[in-house]
Image 1: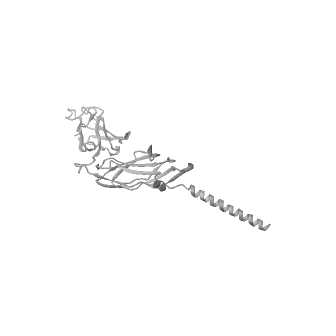
Image 2: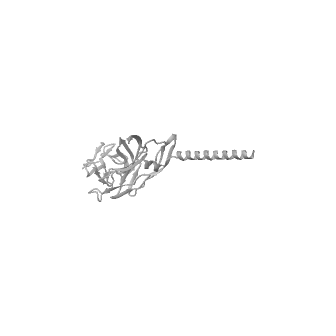
Image 3: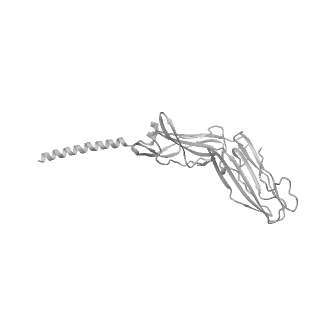
Length: 307
């Protein structure tokens, strides 16, 4: 009896070892690959580039694109690490990726494209470091492969447009416009009258925060009240148009003639690759009982001419 018991024990122990080895082998087989292994095998593709990639000028809008492709699908949101670039304005203007599919080597890949907008503020080379990506990709048998990987570094050069040296507060874009309007005529004013002035800047291929600012100064006998600007960025199929509206109220406090000086705004036209300027003409607020001076507008919307 003792011998049989020992034999039975040995058989049970051996069976347990065989089962344990089998389970271990199965577990080793089912271990999901890492993101780096997916990249090496071509099942995960990450691309990074800037547009445009040549002839970039200071203040110009540069789009950093990050494209992530997998031959399965994404099981959770993608997170992109923070980008800080010295001497450049960095904006995440798009909060969501552009999703699509693509056929590659006979397989269908799910594609996410992200965009970060850059505005270089000086001439020279800009090196964009690798950015941290947190991904969740579908694996085998309903599993998810979750991990972190990095984008490729990219760089670009920005140059100062000719003629812009020494000019302050200029922009680079296309179709830059300046319009102003007053709510009433600017002559025959009296103490106690209020005049509302509105100036609207708009341009394409630029962010609203990059548009010019207006600073109105009070004068003896003329009080000035300025509201916070209204800004908006519209995106129509990838074409951005920015708008900034300044609202200023002038309050006549005494008899006199008050001069609002002309203002010139400079911009680099990306379409024609040339320096241009737009000027708001001088205006006179006449509360002296005399005729309004030449150049004043009378309660109408005007568009500043460009040159």
